[in-house]
Length: 312
Image 1 (cartoon, helix red, strand yellow):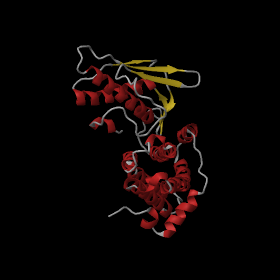
Image 2: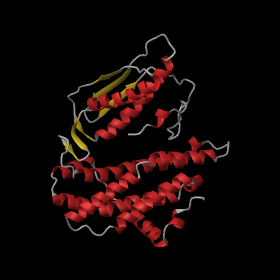
Image 3: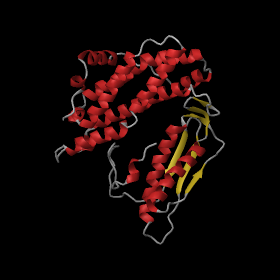
Image 4: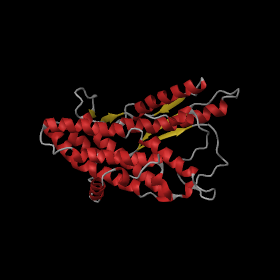
């Protein structure tokens, strides 16, 4: 049976409410504000946070549901995208069905509900990737997917919004943790060491390389292990993990049939006056013949294997 549009799968009144809330203005929340607010955590702070999310999350989720309904080139009609849109409409309905948060018990029930919403969307990224693949499969040979700027711009906005939504839910829920990690305010580590995160991410990536190939290049990390700054460790971990995983594969495939010892991957963590730079470099496969005119969510210069889709 063919997948149905959201407007055909849900009551008209619900879709109209999605449209109404999608026109509302969302409220920006900075990492600094979340850290300062969470550091003074009390039951009253949890209540205020829950009341804020009760109104804010439907706005953000409805906007994404509307955007998923109006994508160009027929992407909105692909089965995988229709499924994702259904998740957003279901989540919007759950949020709007939840009564006004008036006390501690209401807030706890609300927290459980939004954690379930967060879990519902866990597989969103691979599902959207499947939708894009379904679109590419149906395109004519004269259409170059990488030139479809509207879709790339949408995916950039969509994934950034997803990070924001999951951060808001996760930060609120984590403040209920009875045994928080030292120096942590919810998801935010006030004294995060980028060198330590790089070490942990590298060990995980190297373990996958060892499992897939039977060996793995060494990884050398340069930087001050005592340098720290406030950030979300899981976000940095994923970024470094993916970069190192790609470097390990490139080096391993270049030297796996060579008599030479595979050169190490190098990670440099450099502290600036206003920023932090993390550089990952390797001596893997060279792409002299490949031209990269712009970023593409679907580009790869390597064939698929089991470990390319690893997620944290």
